[in-house]
Length: 432
Ligand code: CMC
Image (tube, rainbow, N blue to C red; front, side):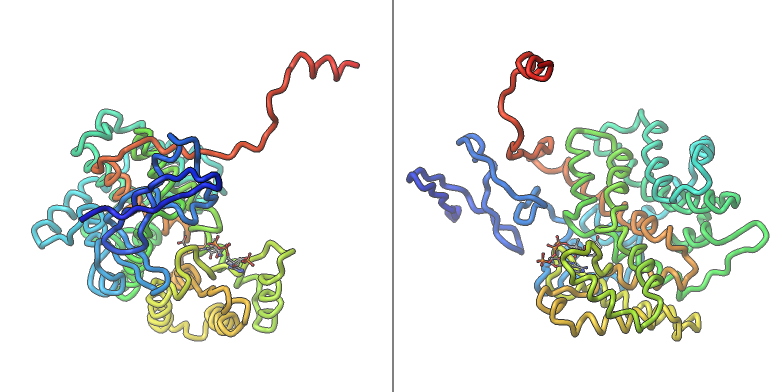
């Protein structure tokens, strides 16, 4: 079949034929990769209309509230799989059969333990350091431990790094928090599932073992699954960009954690809860809604809106349901923050500003409430997001090396600075 083309015609009549690339689903793309050879670059701040790569991992249709991992709807995965099924799927393209699952789980568990010397890395931080700051630095420091097995062009080394990251990030996240509290580090337990192991590390203490509640574990597996990947978001694009230079996977994931921490991205779950705690009372909701609409105020309603979903965020629907299940299991249906959140959601969804701009609650509007009910502190919300997203980051990083078009990421710019200046002339002028 003949390839479709777009024609770019300049005012002076010069024209360029640009190939159109079609994916298996989604919007077609105009391939402008050769445009710079003709003396032009394109301009697209925030990559609003730019596809940066080919990918077969995750598909989002923001208009129709669709999110697929390797073709499977997120709703089906959240209901029927655990997080390690999903991380295997993201990495390998297929869900594991029982034998594959058994060997993947035992491979991940083999790498659960952190090197004992990492204790000193943790102890170098101030006690009150934010867990994300600690987590980012500790993940980056792992590259100092595995330098002999970090050839990014070696498939086996990449697989080993992926397993190591997925295995060790839960301990790194939990220890970042335990250090904060001044509590002893809990070691991972191979007899527990992935989510249960993390919760146990976070909550058990030498004097009081953590009681594992299957409903909370299931809810936490869902949180991890829903956050595992989201195509070319800011942190995943960061991981790809850093990785495009051949940087090691631990450095790439540490960069992803840095990007995720921002309140416009993964930091939104923590920011949402802070906002709800600040609003405190239903009578103040309108004041905050008005602030969110005021262009002279930088305040935004946290947990609302999304770059890609211009309709409901399918993850938010699942999280809302999970929120009800967890609160009912814990007897917290009358929790004041939850009630406040439901009221705020209702008011915002009926407000013209939010309706016209298609601003719906996103996944982070509810995930913070669920985590808080489970006893997870605000400061750990984004760390949990990072723990889940490690699976997506490493899957994208790996995919980058499988493709044919691996190029170092190097955007262009529109220079708006000074033209040529003469230093000696300027110095003379200023002396006068
Ligand atoms: N509250 C008030 N107004 C908003 C909000 C909000 N939460 N989100 C967007 N708008 C307005 C925005 O001011 C703009 O108005 P106008 O067209 O008049 O200038 C319009 O809606 C479009 O917004 P935008 O900033 O151009 O959209 P974006 O795609 O650049 O931003 C966003 C997306 C998620 C950064 C933004 O919606 C936001 O800041 N939301 C709050 C933070 C948040 O909840 N982030 C979590 C995202 S989900 C987790 C993840 O996947 O990372």
